[in-house]
Image (cartoon, rainbow, N blue to C red; front, side):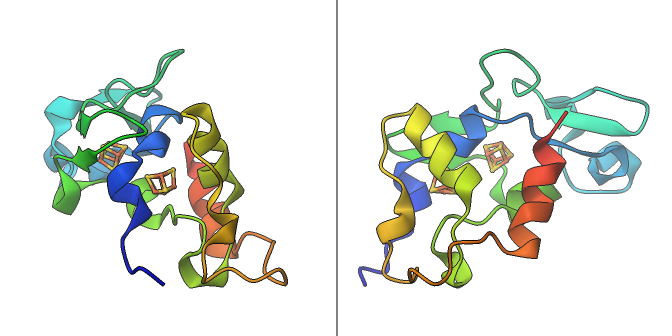
Length: 135
Ligand code: SF4
Ligand code: SF4
C-alpha cells in the first residue's frame, strides 16, 4: 500500500455534490464553518457556496478537480465533508466517491488495497454522509 491519500489528487466530490448541513455548523450559529462561504438553502440547512448549482464546485476548493486539490478550510469543513470517506477507507466501498471520480475521468478506488471483494456495501457511516448531500 502506498499510503498516499487519493483525495489530494482528486477533489471530485467537492465539485460534484451539493454540500449541505445544519445551519448551526456555521460560525455565526456557534459552529466553525466560515458563514461567508455558505448560503442558506432551507430554514434549517445551509450549503457550501458554489455547490447548490447545476455544476457544483465548492468555493473552498483550491486547485483543479481531478488534479492537485486542497480544501482551504480543512479544519473548519462541515460534517458531510468530515464524514464522507473515500473508497477503501475502513475496508468499505463508497459508491458516491467512485461516481464523483468518474465525472472527472478518474478510476474508481475499488482496487484500493484496503478494499476486499467481500466489502462492497457502503458502511452506515458512509451512507449517512451521502444522504446529507441529497437535496
Ligand atoms: S471523490 Fe473520493 S477520492 Fe476524491 S476527494 Fe472525494 S473522497 Fe477523496
Ligand atoms: S468544504 Fe472543503 S472538503 Fe468540503 S466540499 Fe468544500 S473544499 Fe471540499
